[in-house]
Image (cartoon, rainbow, N blue to C red; front, side):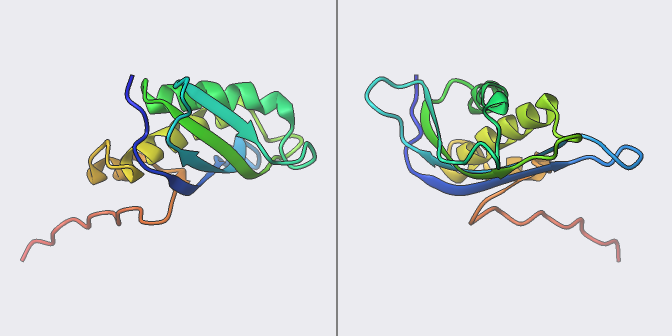
Length: 136
C-alpha cells in the first residue's frame, strides 16, 4: 500500500446542491499528512460536535477511503459545518471522496488535469481549469 508522500493542507470541501430550495449540504476542511507507521487511513477530528456532529464521521471516512483508492494517509479535520435539515450522509460521503482525490492530486499522485472533475473540493495550489480554445 502506497502512502501519501507529502502533506496536503487545507483541503476545503463544500457540497451544496440546491434541489428546490433545500438539498444535500456538507462542509469540512481537512489537512492530509503522510501516514503513520501502521499505514491505512487515520482520521482525527478537531472540530466541535456543534460544528460537525460525530454521526457524519463514519460517512466522511467511507468517502475518504474511496477517494484515496488504497493510498494511506493521516487526515485531520480542522473545521466543518452542517445544517440540521440539509446535511445528508450522502453529501459527506461525496465530500470525503472528493477530498481524498484532491489530496492525491495535491501530492502529485494523480495528474493535475484530474482536478477538473472535482466540483466540490478546493486546496492551495489547485490547478486552474483549462479554458476551451476559441475558434478563429
